[in-house]
Image (cartoon, rainbow, N blue to C red; front, top):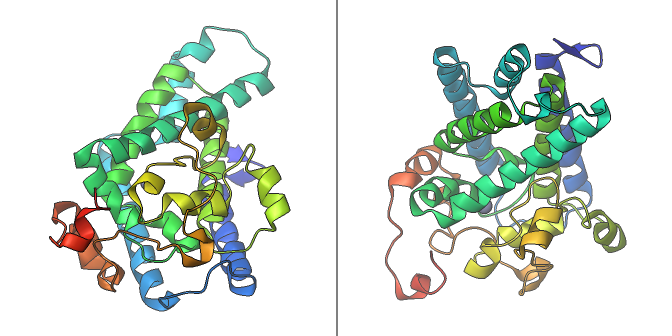
Length: 280
Ligand SMILES: [Zn+2]
């Protein structure tokens, strides 16, 4: 299958790498916050986690062909899903597919904060003590595989065109790289963009150590869901420069160790009076 004259795999890899590089350059030139920790150690771990994710997804999809694109092709071949029951213009089908799948990702993200066992896995993402483009790939392999199955179920129920799924995944991944990046988007631009899309300032609130801020702004691509469902928080109460990013329990360089990050779902937070208040 081809998209814009490129093989789907090449398109996905090319769009991911180019957006990653652009974000890394922009956040170096116009950073939003001063770094407390250097890039080198964190990036090694975050990219290490990404490689583990790739291996885990490859292993799972060899056994069960559950990748989003495979499921969309299967739905296409069998005429499965709501969108195959109705006759709509292609552009509208694509729009519905992208908006609905984005809601599914939003709802899954909300669930990873509300269900204790899922939070244990998702907190690997939140344990990063800085936020930049590399944080966007810091998800424990178990969460990535879980997400694979959630998307597969959504695709079989909805029945979107396979190419719409490829474009949706590229949009969400590109958007995650954009809104985790530590760069200064002019405030006027941020104000307009965040009416529809998640901006770096909006998503940074979600990475605050304060519980009520972590439990807000769940969107990765469209900002409309948080605004609709009352989980939108405009700015961090400590301000973007002073706010502390990460988890209250681990504000040292432990999160910058690959083995630590992989074991975090099975680790209990250290007990200390200071940490109890804001911990989950
Ligand atoms: Zn989260």
